[in-house]
Amino acid sequence: MRLCVGLIPALTEAALSKLKSSGVTNVLTFMQKDPEDLAQETGISYKDLQSIRQLIFAQHAAIPITGTDMLDKAAKSTLIISTGNSSLDSLLGGGLMNGEVVELCGLEGVGKTTFCVYMAIHSVLKLGLHVLYIDSSTNVSFRRIGPIIDKIAKEDEDLEEPLARLKVIQPHDHLELLQTLHHYFNPKQSEEGEHCNEGKKEEKCKLVILDSVYAYINNIHSNTNQELAYLNQLACSLKKLAIEQELAVIVVNRTIRADEEDDKLKQGSFSTLKPALGNYWAHVPNTRLFMEKTRKQQFLNVPGPSNLPEITATNVPGPSNLADATSRFHFRVTIWKSSRLKTNEAEIEIF
Image (cartoon, rainbow, N blue to C red; front, top):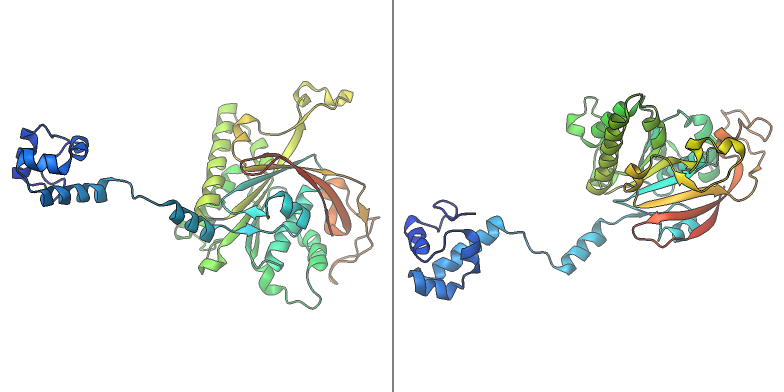
């Protein structure tokens, strides 16, 4: 950047002429010169030169931050959300950390949605957090949520206020999904005025659950380049939300076998499992978890709330709709990838 009149108020035409006569024509050269030597060369007072240097620092240099300041800021802004399971919390280094995207992978019917619903209900009832649940396949209904509430909530607990903190939305496609995320976290531009971070600071949304990301990307009926463009846009939106809004994001992804595209799965080949969406999505999650069943789920004859039909082992809809929280779920959760955690695994049980 060249030195010119008006760049700094103290940099007058007379001072600029003296500096140019000494070969100082740009900011870099000026800042590299010793103020005392420059004062002798140009005849400009040391006080004026120091004033010009300080103004240049204030207007054009990055503000220096000490390590202590950075640590204090991180400590104040960091929120660790407990999953409600001590084994899983230990695996995750205390729980879900705000500013991060956690991907939950697993085969179809393993119980990913059931776990996400449990996590949402636990967060609003036990932790008092606001949660946004994005449901891609309309699996989240009161029939499914009701029995989970019955398991977690205390007897005679007033549920109206806690459940008001849970918002379930069902965007039709990937475009509506992106628009919804934008409106929820940009209230000034929202037509309806409803948004997850409405109100006081403590009422901001702290957990977003996207169930599932694969469903939206897989439904894009266009060429590969457009699909990758939408995938990249969604990835940027989720990571930006996690960091700027200081919240945690859980995304559910389908797990496929490495040879699935070769149709070997039909022949009984059991090759290595991998997350769907490929390498273009691999950089998005800070932590990637793989969930699998460790034993047969034990269904219990536990009725839901009084206004729901009784759910028993004989009328559970089936593995793809594991319902309804009337069973004891046993999972093995493995860290496939993480930017801050070591690869490890833990067995967890919910309900």
